[in-house]
Length: 244
Ligand code: SAM
Image 1 (spheres, helix red, strand yellow):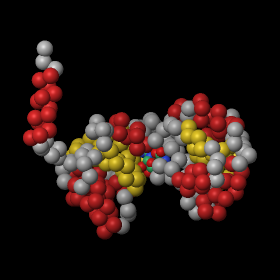
Image 2 (cartoon, protein in one colour; image 1 turned 180 degrees about the vertical axis):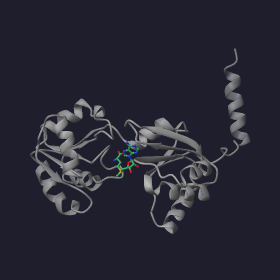
Image 3 (cartoon, rainbow, N blue to C red; image 1 turned 90 degrees about the horizontal axis):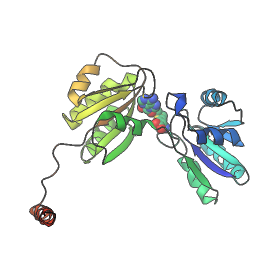
Image 4 (cartoon, rainbow, N blue to C red; image 1 turned 90 degrees about the vertical axis):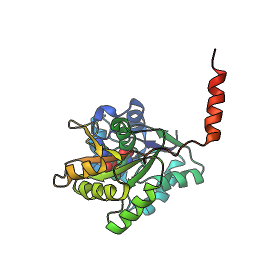
């Protein structure tokens, strides 16, 4: 039926494309793709050839109105090069405008590098903050790191191989010796997760920029604040009620 379909695609292993994603992609009237050449490979893999239009940071404002218009009577699928659209990828304004126009918005969830990295890192997952890519300029980067440092949560950052060493050095300087993990090439042949404190990881990668796509996961800051005595009393009372 007509509307906007947000379709997650594999981040390296084609086997991760869900049957539902394949079904929507083969039935969509049009697939809006970040890079149509990248998506063509995926569509060929599932044996379908729907019309595609490019939808990326540089043409989105211009393309959005015609896509919104088409959703009134057709199924429009949105994909990015890899993973979940809208997550450090284009799409949120398309969803916003589709909703404003009263069109159906349907999600077909699936691979997302941030979530996959959290499952590999062995760091707390009860509270996490996804911060995407840090700014590349040193001053803006250290300001952002200082802001993130105050947050009591695990941090998840996207990065590329060539910039990893500089980013780890800045994180070690700004956040100290927190536990962290560098996850790489997730779902691909050379998937790995290297764990250690930020200074240890910064030293390890200082002169050895790794290949491939990277997610950095940084554990939360030090010990949690001491519980107040009221909390301790309440916990004690609660524990006593459970005694036989
Ligand atoms: N929307 C995508 C998602 O759901 O993960 C992310 C798109 S963002 C432009 C690309 C970044 O995602 C890469 O620079 C890397 O940090 C991360 N990434 C994507 N695929 C990855 C993989 N297989 N292994 C590790 N990181 C990956």
